[in-house]
Image (cartoon, rainbow, N blue to C red; front, side, top):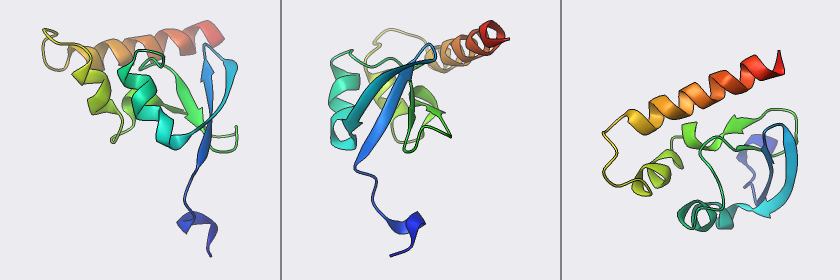
Length: 91
């Protein structure tokens, strides 16, 4: 089986640059829905390449679903702003 075709069963999570631990991928959506995970949290399979949860095409809609009454696109803009502020803080 090619590495790129294998299923990802667990991911590492970090918040504000700090490792939060590792969880099964099947728990990502429930943890987003219950508010445990934030759109600005990051995930990685191997702790080298990190991706922001709120920017992932399959996960982003679950963050929008948590914010009724927020104007369309505002949550994405706020996520972008949060990511920018994180980059600035890292220097």
